[in-house]
Structures are given as structure tokens and as C-alpha cells.
Image 1 (tube, helix red, strand yellow):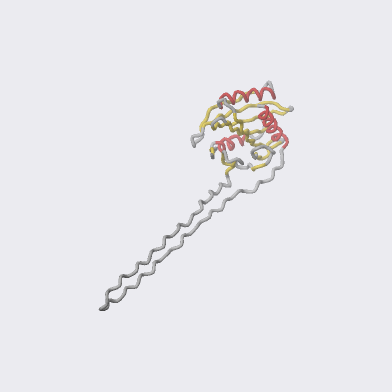
Image 2: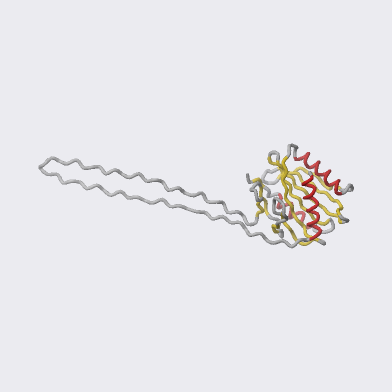
Length: 223
């Protein structure tokens, strides 16, 4: 949980400092096709009968064609989706957000200005042998370590329209004298928990909550 605590603090700092992100180049894939050659057999000539014995026509063997291998096209990625660098998951990018490299395993998403900073999304993955519910409870202890007066706003079990279950947990706490709100979306695949951490100042950016919720509901595992 130590690593996760650092990520939570980083999320807060990003919301408070308002970084200037650089737009990452969009990834595209090129589909390749192959064409098979056609072969037309040449008819065999027929000998004209004469008083001499009839010759038996020689049968010309038909050559066997070797099939041409066809390359499987690489699916073109949706430019409106966020894809994890390890191919583990993807989701629609919330309107107004752009990818930004925060030096973590996964690229983050920085959103519009809100209060004295920017709203943002940070992605994290952690493997352990506890359930997603137990993991969410453990994260609450991390929040309490940051601020003993932390408030749990909501903690719900939800399912995306695509059938992927997740936990949505919203908290509010003070760090460095600034009150922030964070919503954690926790997904589980096997023993790995994938968390999306949405951070904004508590007094600004509430209009982006529904936008982020809508984007998270498009989350899917890609492997």
C-alpha cells in the first residue's frame, strides 16, 4: 500500500498544481492484404486418327497451386479511447481530458482547469490475494493516514453496461491545507486490482464528476 499512498498524494498534487500537459501522438495501425494468383490450364491437343494405330494422348499433369498467406489486419484503435500501455484495459477518454506522462506505469489524463488546479485521472495496478472489497477497505486506511478526519462520501458496488463489476468509492480529505475530493474506481481481474483515481478540488469541478462516471462505464479488459 505504500506505493498506492504515493500515487494518492501525487493525484492531490496534480489537482493543486495544475500542470501543462503535452498531447501524446495518436496510435494507428495499418491493415495489409494479399492477393492469390489465378492459373488457367492450357487444353491438350487431340491427334487426328489415321490408318496407323491410334496414339494415346499424353496427359499433362495439372500443377498444384501453393496458397498465398494472408496477413491478419491489425485492429485500428479508437482515437477517442484511452489504452493502457500494457494492453490490459481501455476506456473512453472523458470529454476535455488529454493524456499526460506523469512518470508512472500508466499515462494519466489531465482535464480542464478547476479552482486553482486541474482535474485529473491517475491509473494504477496492484496484484495481491485479497478481494476488491477488502482492497477498498485497505485503501481507506491509506486515506486516514493522510488525513485522520477523512470523510467517506460513498462506497458502492457497480456494474458497467458491458457487464464489468467495479467498486466506486468517493472520499474527501485535507492535504497541505487544501480540501480535495477523490473518486476511486476499482476493477479486478484475477488477483490484480486496477484503480482509476479521479481528483478535483472539493469546491470546484463538480460538473466533471458525471463526465468521468460516464467514461469509466466504458471500461473493458483487453486481455
